[in-house]
Amino acid sequence: KSIVVLISGSGSNLQAILDACSAGFIPGQVKAVISNKAAAFGLKRAETAGVAAQVLSHKGYDNREDYDAALVQLIDSHQPDLVVLAGFMRILTPAFVAHYQGRLLNIHPSLLPKYQGLNTHQRAIEAGDSEHGCSVHFVTAELDGGPVVLQAKVPIFPEDDAELVAARVHEQEHRIYPLVVRWFCQQRLQQSADQALLDGQVL
Ligand code: GRF
Image (cartoon, rainbow, N blue to C red; front, top):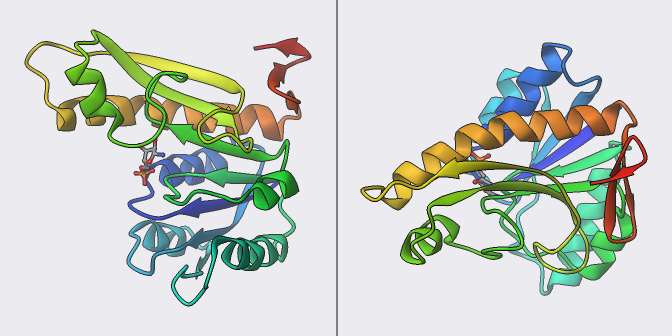
């Protein structure tokens, strides 16, 4: 299976997926990594892995529709079976999401449906939560609202700050994202409307 990964930053989830591909854990290959930011460290990770690293800056586009149309063109030039959002910090248009329906995954740093949007770790701490985590989900037109495939939980301890919690969550992200990509590439995972199915069972 061919995979395209979209990033905006560090790309530690990208790294986990690249490593899982080269270890044979994911029966697939990352064909390209695309960033909307030229400074994203993940681009270096791609180069080191021998994967095409491309920048498509959102600057220079008048509106979201035009940028997303250009992004679709670039992604589709790699003919991916799966598009993986790994810290891609842009809201996608409904047209983009519709184009990749059923083959577009995202990871979000909360136990969805809790804490959609930004600053999830700080918000969980401020709410006094004793547990937090991350979710891999299929992307639908609803922001952070698509069907969840897999979640991992971490504890929040009283003395924690957002940075400590973020590090704990990241560790789990690096476990669950490669696993979900593996399932997809094994053709065990499907999206059907607002449900995710693994081996035909609703998750
Ligand atoms: C992760 O926390 C992910 O949940 C969120 O963005 C962050 C990306 O981190 N969507 P990295 O670039 O993979 O290190």
